[in-house]
Image 1 (tube, rainbow, N blue to C red):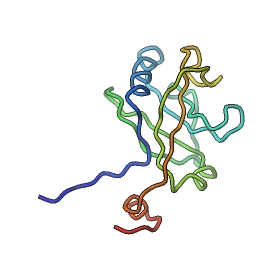
Image 2 (image 1 turned 120 degrees about the vertical axis):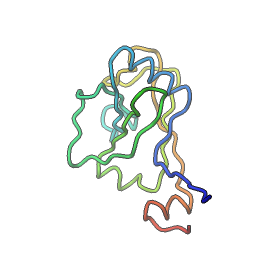
Image 3 (image 1 turned 45 degrees about the vertical axis):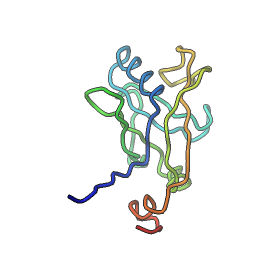
Image 4 (image 1 turned 60 degrees about the horizontal axis):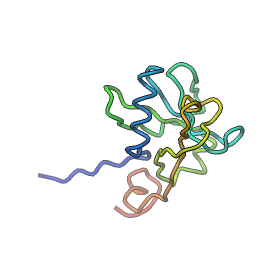
Length: 132
């Protein structure tokens, strides 16, 4: 039986998944948009579905499984993606004041991104060079 490897651009820590489940219970289905840096630096912004409208200039990075019926989708602007396309992103959470427009704001926690460079196999999978 062949071994299948799944490649993802995004992941979530257990702590962040727990907070997403709690926020989903309060706000309904959620999505993330990786901020471009204006008001909240480069924080991942978490919104109820329909509160933030993605458009043709947004790129889907994939989704994260947090233990709900539906995965939570992650987006980023196309122009920002050009800078981050060689990077794997992990959504995490730490104590602190959440971003002003993101639903975790009042919780005393804030989402943040941890990143690492894609490895050779991931680069090849995403068509960015590397070796298979």
